[in-house]
Length: 482
Image (tube, rainbow, N blue to C red; front, top):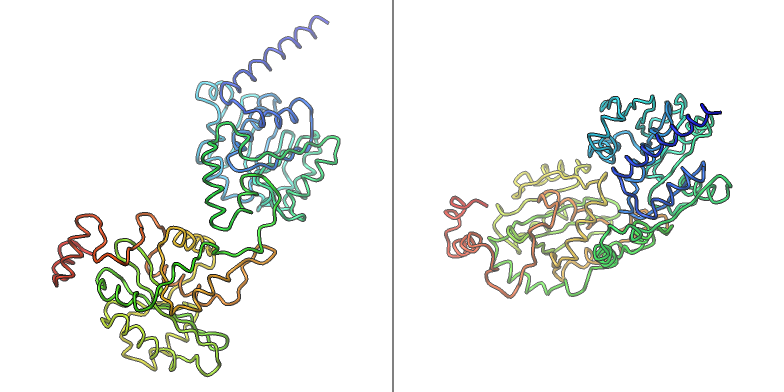
């Protein structure tokens, strides 16, 4: 009996020492403590926590993994991200997991850290190993005798879970699933949340971002206003309020305003007066069946303000051939700026037939012509850039750009949150032009005042404009560069 009491006292001291060390490394806020209590005090086996961004889930995940590994000698603990190549950025390369303990405590508890395998070995025989759910075929062979954590739960591959979950049965190990909510009832994260609610051994939590006392209320207010102005309040609800809201059925460019449209005469007068301040582009979206769209643009060299100058929108069969479209395009471009060397033109790189026909029909095509991609794999980023351009007043439309404006005004998602690929020809060619112009950020950009002869900028910019206007453009280019 004395030996048993002595062992119990020794175990209690060890536990107290570990908890004291952990608390010195990480101080959880009250909402995080609630989740930790469900695991370590209440003994729950399926713990699902839907939370807003900046809730502190990464710190919580690290705490849970380290506490379980340190308190349970010889335990095999797993951190699971949706994809193997995400682990480095989410929790490893930034040192959140491997550097969770300060140096003194790391030397006390950790045996080794393998950056290649992303594995932490403890002196008590436990380890923490990072996995990607995309490698679901290998997940059947793991022995999960400690805690398992699914991070970004809505993106975890269900096939991984189906193969991995039986591994938890060896010691009835707990599973913690965390992340921002999924709006889809068929999503694994949603299903696990509903299961946790109904299980006696389950615990379900839902915490918005603002429960984290360390996050700025002003930041959240700015974020709410920003996303509301972008027509994305539903994203704010999901990402920051942790609500299961369906993202979809909304317009992409609600910030588009009629005040952005100016009479073509006013646009032409401004362009003529300040031609050397602009780069000129024509974008082609060739189509021989539904629509052949063309757009002309001017982008300010210094302020990065964009002017949609003119368009062609041919939808009738027989009116949308290269032989009919190109002459009209060149005529419109010449009307806007007769200096052919100022123009750079682009087209959908997938429409190689267009370039071939132009070369055949117009061997002396006067503008530089480039194939250009439209960010098929990163379309959302380009659309987000266009939103920023509009929100910051960095785009003006000539009243001749009727179809282009209407396309943007009516562009929206369907009920499943997917872009409706109808009548987006002008939007596509606009993306070609942005790519050709290397326009990837609005940093340093500012609206152009159409009433000013010279926009006040840096002394170098002002001198450059003035010299160009007075006829010393070539010397100016040589001295200052474009």
